[in-house]
Length: 218
Image (cartoon, rainbow, N blue to C red; front, side, top):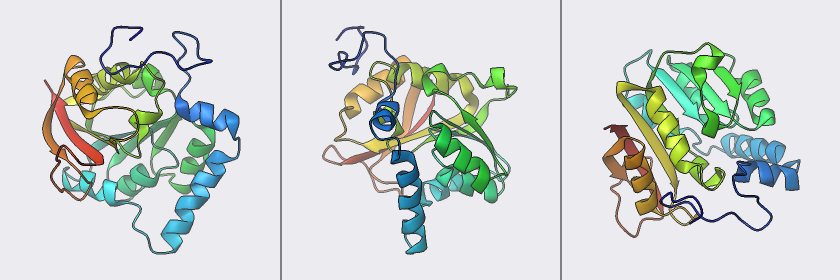
């Protein structure tokens, strides 16, 4: 491994060492229409009756009404928008300007910021207060620039209130092994309270194809 971090692969072919372009940005560069397709896909699912806010309900159940929530990798506001609608103070951050513009239009009750999670510094945006919960859903961790997972987790810890929880979910078959994620979390000052296999609270097992990790500050 080029940088000595657990779970961080060597640069991909065509990627310079230290390149922090996220895999999502690379996808958009290859297909500029992907963001619009992504939004429409979920709108179609919602119109067909598919539940697209299950993650948000799980986070809501963990919180007092009016809590502060950071939606890390918020996309078009699918999770954070619901949490704002039920009474929480929500800040969402995403690297994709198209998705953030959609979130601002669809969910004006929250604050939406274009930004890279590997450079997360909300105090610089006039938001100095920590969060009661940080939610990172939708496989965001697997779309980060390789080598930045630990940087992002450390940023989560810095933005988390002392009694807060960070809840991270991603597929276990997407190139980021669970043991590497847990090692990166530990190195960033985060330890698991609970590991689940689904957002509807089914227990995690070694053969699970998804992880939902509820983390607290060490």
